[in-house]
Length: 358
Image 1 (spheres, rainbow, N blue to C red):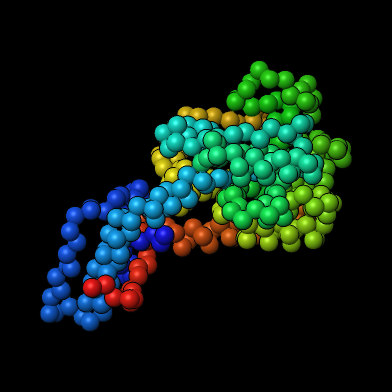
Image 2: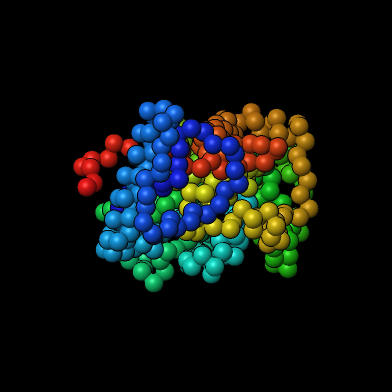
């Protein structure tokens, strides 16, 4: 069933705050009057809107088609294969806070030792769960797993992938201190490197393993997937595959530095899951909760040393590629006024609809 909105004009409208879609009245639909002074183009638009209303009314009265549309929405699954230390907990908290109100399920994918690569048999189990577990639909799945291509398993209706990435050096610095000092989300939990007081700068200067350029290689393989080449550090093929997946297999990929804009775009595009997310992020305490403690920003010398690595150059190229793609999508979805961003209203409509109704 085509989704038709009759309150749309092709001319650009003034920026406006985004509001959730509302149901159209079900009473008699009358052709809006057209004054003699209106241009032929205006008359065409008025007639087109009237024809759309008639079709929309017929679809509303058509029970099976309406049920089919609702079933499509209730069958939706989103996978957020979250990259560590990219504000993923902050974003996931929003999904948990909204799931009861928006009536969907949230499931955390917890792999042994946070291994992002699943065994072949677990891949089959996971795909089967996602596609056939009707009691958990609509569902929002999140976990530290690399991208998995559902089409390889014969799945016709694939889940919707979303993700967030971060400047690679900033992400590594955050992860380095997180392993030593934890964060304010679970402050009592003992971390793997707890007790190690060495700063990130000292680690880089001494050539330590926890801050080596190879540790930057994470966001590319997460987007590349489960192929062996994805995890070969510095693989050009892996980066190209990650770029391909980002553009072709992901619904939206945001960046940590512009997380609010990412949330706003998701709310506008997927209100079934994210209605109320922007306001919750702006005002809620949970969404801003997790911060790595004892983190010290690296010096310019440390940054410059890491940037000499080919691994950093590739991860940074991928990050900038993702950032450019996100900013392109945002530029075509919002307008800025007085420092605030506003979601654009629908900017297309249907005309020349045949066959003509009687």
